Length: 298
Image (cartoon, rainbow, N blue to C red; front, side):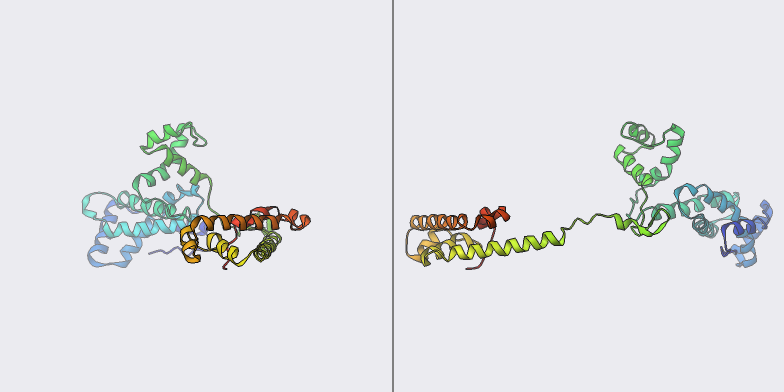
């Protein structure tokens, strides 16, 4: 058996032309020797004489952007599978039988290597994947759009959504973010990716603002009486907050009285906040609503 060890594809192509083609009788005899006696010399001649067939089939899939050497290697594997299942007594030549196996192996490799995203395993999607380019050529379409997707979908017996999705996959290949931009090896695509995270300056500002809000809140709470402080903490600052009835039961007063104390205390806090230096308040425009956004333990 000839393995693909040549230094380049061109030298490989030149090397396989040296192997002679087999006539029907010679092929039958060699396959029979391999199947019945395990004759490795016979195996070598069979495989060698069909390497050109694999190369021809692999060349037909060169438009998918994958290495031709890889396609040839996969095709050779497919040919070996075909030989294992081939029966020389059926009356067909090995090449006729092997074509399906070679194509199947190459298509499987292309389909699984095309994208880092796992493709669908359904037969209809695989058929669409390999038939779309050919059908576009026959219909004279450069690209598939929403206007002509219906025609393609009808011909391929799939949905328009599947056609448009696959067209996007075929026209937009995956590539590494480390890929160099143009001929500049020092610059890669990842250098141009925008960072969606907030800048360190914004994070620092927000941290300082939160700390300032907490300080103002604590100062405002210190202006309350102990009863007002307890009511406000129970109504607004505990998680989960207690009901007016529960607080009243704990503090030996009615729920309505608790509501009045909470209202008066909240007005005191609002007044304190409004009396904070205006220059500082302008720097923190969200200060007026801080009370409902901050939760502290009392």
